Image 1: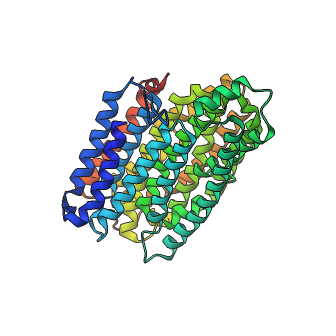
Image 2: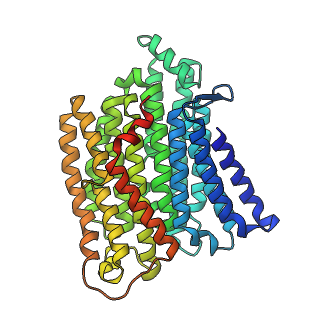
Length: 457
């Protein structure tokens, strides 16, 4: 809870920076606030706090993901300093990012469906504006408009589902709903199950699972690259943690209501996202479809293990987020140099800038699940849990789609090692960040048990 207060305070301070004329101090304030939030998470560890009439609960699950969101945001901010410092509305953009982060923290700690809705809306409204923050780009304006329309539509499904569940159980509290469902399993009205499915649809939109993913590639491509990086890491992590908290605990006893639907969505997500990515010519769109594909693996872990999947979810999102930030950092450097995010823009990157090429190689290999990097152990843990619970066909499908993923990831790798002329050079601050991200990818791959053990409840 203390971390959330710090983040909200940072958001309000950012809004006042323009009026009080201390914009130059914002970078220092952001770094200090995010670092303080992580320290407060560590200090609060193993202390479960229920606040505001049990509407939010900061247990180890919420604290773990709060710390992860703050650390990823810190790395993201380090990567995207130019997005703020070279813009006249620096404080406005920063405030939107910080409030989006606050919404994500509420999403991972909610214990009441009203708080889930508030968290989603705080996060989403900030992102609608950020997606369209490049006013000179038609694609950016289109991305914001499409995201807003599709997001509003999905929110309608979510709210209708919450209303139906409330009508059947008389509560918004997910703990009370879970207890009511368990004790009245045979007498629940049909509209309760309809409500669960509507909530399921609304949440699968937020995590961009197929077939509710159509907004993601266009929004990811049209948004400024820093915003795309934020959406594919921080926002994706918060949404998946909220999905897990809802369906692995609150609705675990009525899994039969959505089990078949979940299986279909996993199959579609793994197949459609990976196959479609093969035909993309933009690295930005490849990473967008990659982000959708990774949702399929996470959903497989949730389906296989239920509430026991919290550690795997945390490890997978940590390894995915670190690799994605590294990949987007290199993509941003290439885009600034060439003005393009196409695969062709990466031609000869190794000969122009070996350091960037090596970082991109490690990040892509981790996303593809190549050992001994962190992404490999993430997929291994998902497949191991699925096998333990008898989901062999899904594991086979997951392995096959991972092989497809290697094909489109390697398109970028092959392009980088072609001979070509001069290219981008990162500044010394970005170099330090990229070194730290590569070290994190390697460390997560070497010590997976230490990370997974954090959330073994």
